[in-house]
Length: 203
Image (cartoon, rainbow, N blue to C red; front, side, top):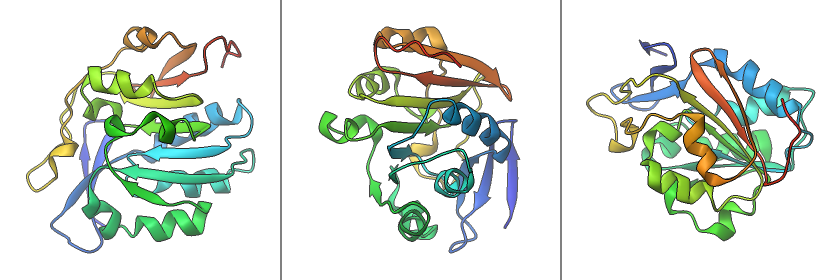
């Protein structure tokens, strides 16, 4: 598999079906921090992985002996990635889940509220801030966010428009949601956990 490093927080990988298609995906080095954070906060329940990339989350969570979950579903904005990476088969086999096509910003509250844990690993920077905050405001469980500290474009010719980076985030902006939050910088990116209102359990 060919790899094209981009900055320090994302890399582009060629899909197995069409060697001319590139997809940005989060670095594996981020995941020990993410898994450690998840392990501190008990069972994950029903999980939604937003922007699944190559499908790291269900495999890494399944194989981490500290974590338990009911199922892991994914939400991908670009149908081509779902097909080219066989994501539906991967999520079904690894975590008993399914993969839906759509934008996080367009999801109704009843769908987002069905999840106890939502993962947003290197996806928030692809969203308009107003739309993203509105969608995050519909969630009820914990939300784990990993987003770059610095702005760097991930899109390259031939990629879908959903791969453009359009926003740069700081934790203070997420405080507008009025939810309890903890955060730190890991690998030059923000690692943020949003909890239900009134939850103060720390890192």
